[in-house]
Length: 389
Image (cartoon, rainbow, N blue to C red; front, side):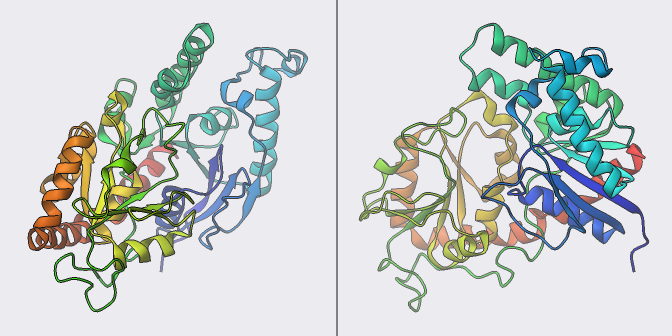
């Protein structure tokens, strides 16, 4: 039986719709910690019985860029940039939760929650999912405000890393933080053991409909898991033009999980469904899992949940070639492409070579079950906790 280690408050500037937070809480609970959650309540709220309590606070966009000026009550008198009054209010909201939970440690998810929590006198671990100081270069239109946000967020990363252990999702982000501290731990976004497809089922691509388990009369089926828009694409996750690859014949069909449209002969969209249902669709119907983003310099830093989930569901991951960390982690158990033209060629090839595809899928599935699992890295979280105490 685990020894009682103390209370850990998982603090987030958003909701709980992130399996990484739940997995980290489960890691702590197994080791004897009592996890609690504090974040923002949204329509996408994800429940988990791993937490001993839930607490909700507001966290505005101004709070993400805000900072204290004097560190005294005088900050409440300045309502303009850098919004010290908003920083003061954020601290007060977090302090109320801390007074109620009385945590021994704060596991802060992303720099914005960590920045305000770091003033409150509780040992803290920063879990940086996003590397926002780099992402701000992408999402903004430039100019003084963008440059100022980048400077402020980079400053927060440096100061937080200098004072607290850092956990992050990929080795390139860990390298960034090693400029400021040696207390850095890379914990990729992989599923927990038994979370996805515990029976190691796989719908064969060869041999037609496989006893009626797979829809589509033997079509090759690719899957994209994600709510990304075709019409207003995120620069990092730009999938504009993806639907055009699929013809229902040579390149097979696409299932989109996370959006409601389109629905036609080549593309079927199933909406935003619970992850358990998404896993069921991928296991029973899919053959190939796509990371089909158009190339972007930030891809070397990413560690998306979906790639490990594809492999666990028995899909062969086809990955954009500049996602260096992802490709390095999967090794021979994924294939890369440089553009949608190459992706189309690979899909047509595997539509003709189903037996080869199934062999590679079985190998990727076995590798995922042994190597692409959260438990392989969770000791790093516990070590970060020890170093923060």
